Length: 289
Image 1 (cartoon, rainbow, N blue to C red):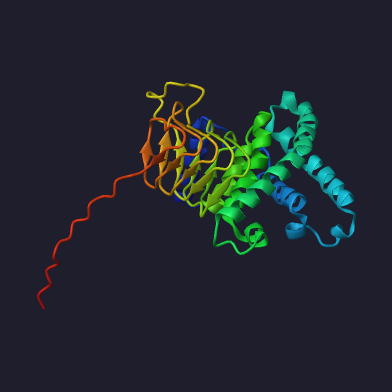
Image 2: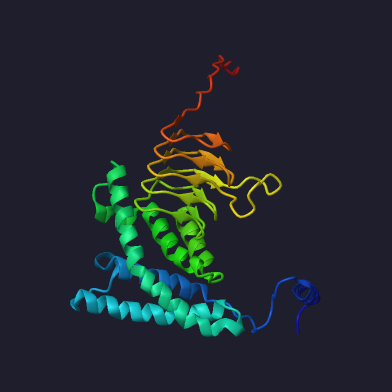
């Protein structure tokens, strides 16, 4: 039926699947549906910013009725996905967890409105808040983070990370759902930003492209539970800066220059400046013709 080289390759791959440390074949896996999780994010965005992403026909309803309709729909979809993410013996917890997440969504919306304000106030290139809502990757990544964080807080497996990696793939911004981030958060450009799981960020913080809030290598980490830095309020961190380690704290009102590499704490009201590398100029020799 199959040529020998096809059969040999198939036999080898089947053996790989059998030896794999994770399940590789069969219908017995209980996993959330990645497409459904992404669909949930889109539904929540319709709920949070209805004038921009909602269904115009549904918005003929009163705002409260429109919101109730979507909340009910989101709760049902979320219950199904949480049940698949939980161990089978715990799936009865799914309705309660979904309800808790739904009850948290008004607070998520309030936080996102502060993030929208921060983006408009901080970016002189932003012509309007409407433009930010439609086009800015930073606000989209923050939106996904704030939703995923609510699931992370309730120790729901896998789904928060599916959400955050969807935003990562869309924007180049990698915010772990476990990070704690205060109100009025601004990301400019955003490409290459990494915010680790145990990062704590205060209010009114600005991050520019390429910033890493990361961990030191495990053998150097002195705080097993806190691997990533703490950033105070009213802090600005410019592009390309790397701030590493669970004991590293950036104090309130500090400014960290671009391309800084910090593993030590910075006091409040401090500006970290990086010495400009000295350029070297050499005369170019023209190629002989």
